Length: 302
Image 1 (cartoon, rainbow, N blue to C red):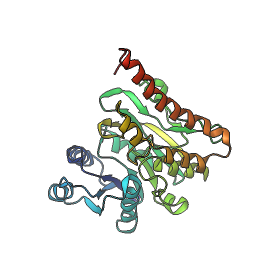
Image 2 (cartoon, rainbow, N blue to C red):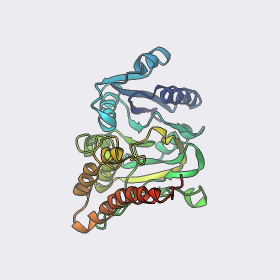
Image 3 (cartoon, helix red, strand yellow):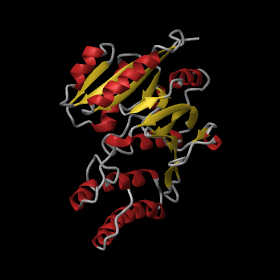
């Protein structure tokens, strides 16, 4: 059987402490796999870090490929640059999306190799993602999206792990961590849409496009990763200034433009815009509700 070459790719912008922990865990994990069955290459896009991330990586992990960005790539552009390098320069067979703030279970890569040896190139593989600080709570077992109603959700989000989530399940889209696919997918559907979805929704858009072109998207519960949410996103934090910023910032999952662009691409009727409209009514309305209640002495529970 041919040895599989897997390129693990992720972008960074500062966050050196996260990167140090990430690379330490990856290095020790790779030492435990059967080198005759698979090999891993790590490709990192440093998108303009100012904390000496690039220098530190090259000094301590000289075999890691570090590409240089200028700060304008964001997540999707950084992933695209790394994937281009992995395909054109490294001859990778598979791409594995990663982040520097996730850690794998001890058997993650062993299980992944076993799965890759059994699936075909029309299968996109997703991981079971937990909260890092609440290891029994699931963050995602893949996403669902109904193009007619606009309903968009993540399976298992906030649920305690149980037998219900211990079988592989099909999804419509995947988050940008622990997602694995054959490089031929990029040739088939193109790269991430970093223009419309530079930071958020690039992952969902890519995998949903793949599903719509006949790919199976399957989440495997044996692929367990733990996501540290401390550096994720921009929210209002009870500040009106930050509320307004969060509605337009690329760093925010409440960026109105990217959400409505996603629905424009993936829905086909006006009714489908109801869920995303309600998302913003609840977000903005909730801010002013708790501001008013705060003036009356009622504080929101953390």
